[in-house]
Amino acid sequence: MGDEMDTEFLEELASASSTPGGGGASAYCGAIAAALASMVCNLTIGKAKFSDVESEVVGCLGRLSILRSRLVSLVDEDAQAFEPLAAAYRMPKDNDALIEARTAAIQEGLILACEPPLAMMRAIIDVLRECDFIARNGSKMAISDAGACALIAKAALMSASLNVYINADSMSTDQDRQRFIDEADALVSRGVELADAIYLHVASEIGSFTEGGR
Image (cartoon, rainbow, N blue to C red; front, side):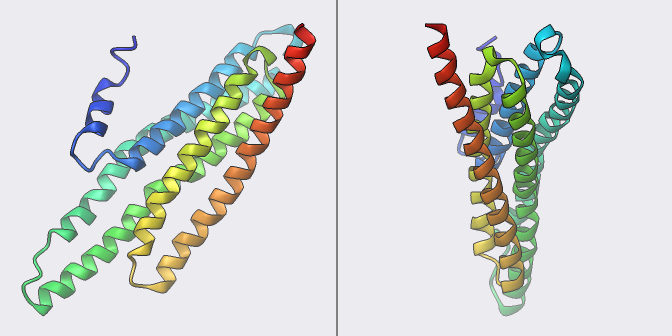
């Protein structure tokens, strides 16, 4: 299983090709986080101890499945959104008219390239919301996996934000630049706060759990 696990994606990621890159890796890590939270749900469902929250956990599992699929699809969407920007940078600049056309194409490409990482960030925050619920209500035997989900999701969120910031930084219009930066800032702030709260809860629970097991 290990040798077959997305070796093609990892080889492409390691290659000299610009896609997939940090954006695609961020989306894939977000999908991994969603999968980990799903595992905690599956280890909770059907256990008599958690029967009072089973319907909520089932709902959580369904939403995580949708989020995982969405994040996987964003790997390709991110690569596709980068293509027009890369093409724009290759446009000729031999005279003023060509320079003007190239500049306009680059600005359009920068805006397009910001959309997938922002979509990743929104989806990852939704993953963290589900993770928060399952970390607090799911199987304690898998609580470390919920913690791992939070940490991986946090890294995915922050790395996706870098793709927004670097593209926004090159935008010539202050309004466009600030719009993307403001949304990325808000998503990072919200997601990091949630991920850190989940991690602290998990760390606290693991401490009390191991002490009780001695």
